[in-house]
Image (cartoon, rainbow over all chains, first blue to last red; front, top):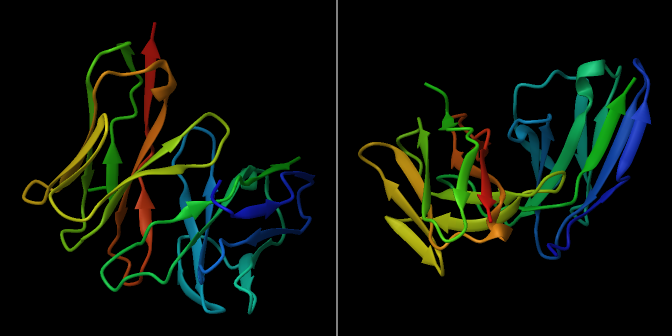
Length: 116
Length: 111
């Protein structure tokens, strides 16, 4: 096990609602990245938090927002849910990222979000 | 060119076979690469890291070809338990420290 936990495991929401997903990183890891994975696709980068600051963002609209707390746990918030937001949301923790690229990331089990 | 590109497969191979997957990347400055394994409806799990020309771990060998900008994963003596989707990961050129996942290559090992 990676020691990365996510909650809840499953969630069903309706269009227009808001959702908060949570992630606890592996002990000692100060970087958390969030990904969206649609069926049959690879994980798509949403954003990354490093020492409580957003450290990069993928091609996701502003209604996707996040937080990182002093203990390095993190939240992903999605407002005004759309049907296409239905996906597996993965959080990955790592040590601080090297200057030239990514570092080994360890994933939590994910939250499966269904938007009706 | 896509940042990371993989053949989606599926690759159907008999037990005991050797199978290889390739993954091309676009960021020539990339220094580190990863292969992850993902089982159906589960999270990706780190399989191998590649920081130089290659890496070997038991039946698994990853190789990096910087000139042609691709990495490969070789699995020898395939087991039924190797059936999964294999995701290639490379740093992208976004100007900050993030990585891009390929869409994955599905492997099915047949008895």
